[in-house]
Image (cartoon, one colour):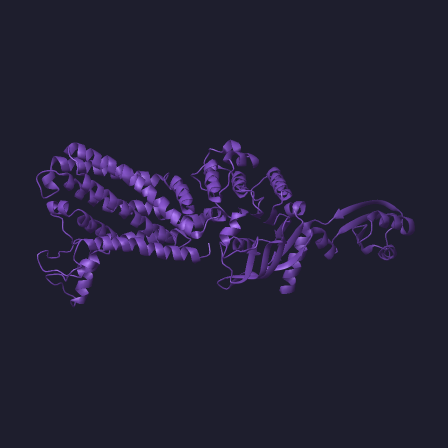
Length: 287
Length: 306
């Protein structure tokens, strides 16, 4: 309950971030442009010549999987470290609030801000899209929105936790950008590099199955894979397969773990572990 | 009942000793001044009272609760004006108070609190645009929510003009009259001198003195000093004055006689000098300020330790 008080205050404060709304504007613009393009010439973007709502979702997810990490970075990287560096945390914690209230309140508040910006963007993008298409798939829409909000919470948790590791915004910025670069930009190369080293510095023609698990470590890949798990029929129609950039032969006999549900497991881990670590560090440090 | 009980408190940052074996008791109902030069460990001590910082050793009890294990209970009954704080730039004064009242479970009306500290007309402006003095008042308004039993104020007059500082003293007195214990740190001696019942002076993390202002004066022989213009001036006169009952010291100081009066009425001492030693032409009384005492304590201590 006390954490909610913090979350409300934090929402009021952070929702006024100009950087966030700049990003939302770009997001909406991008969605509108691509949605329009997709409805006009679907064969350029998907496997089917007909534009479908499922197709629209699967290509919107490509944009949200980049927008959510970036927006989370902008909204959350200073959330805790900034308050410590400036000293506003002293006003917060002079009140009858625990560090846990402050930390989880921040997490909830920033997730709310992220969901708010995301909601407005998606409403505009998918709204116009479904008008242009003249059709809506409510189940696909609900599954997509639910998963995307979860993904936003995951990223908000990661960024707030990274911010709680330090009292310096410079270091918090480095951590946040570093995380984004490693897990979003470079991660596609990591499984390849690992295989390359294990195979004696040469690339095999087919990749071993466990590589799939390595690819899923990247939160946005786990997010895409989770969408396939939630909407298998839509995914099949779009020819979307799990793999995250690495070819895993879908016809071969596969071990139990090569399944889209693994994406959900990784998202759950990304939600829980960073928050636990961030919370522990924040409650035990001198402010 | 004690409001604050500090026992053998130490805090090290790396190998820098910020607080060094500090013990201190603040009684309920008093206005207690916590004095020291910059870097003496005042803010570190206050940060430990509020559990912003964890002590290296020693214990701190505030209003009967352990400051580290029961911080929530402490802060429920405490109003705080922290040091080096920052307001939420994008929130208005009213929004600050709405949040703080909710967090503290108070039933105040934001505007009434803002009015009490004199910034009601700025209630709906963003606090980022407030002057330093207005921010100080805003945080003071937050501290007053819920009629706290204890006020912890770290440098409350920082950024206030003389008028504002006087108003701050009035708020402190008024709260104290309602039964609130006030613990405040300062390096502004006039603030402390004007309102405090008792004072602790710390330097380099250690307690150097704790007493009433009068007690500190007496202990340093720097109580009240008479400067006398006499008809004549020589060593013999000084020696005679030194023998007078109630005089604890006499010297010649720039063509005047400097007389330190102990526990006797200054008037009687002057009368005696005029009657029996030398006719007095004029005199003045100088009360040593707490500032002098403070300098005396903190520099003496440094010399001893050097």
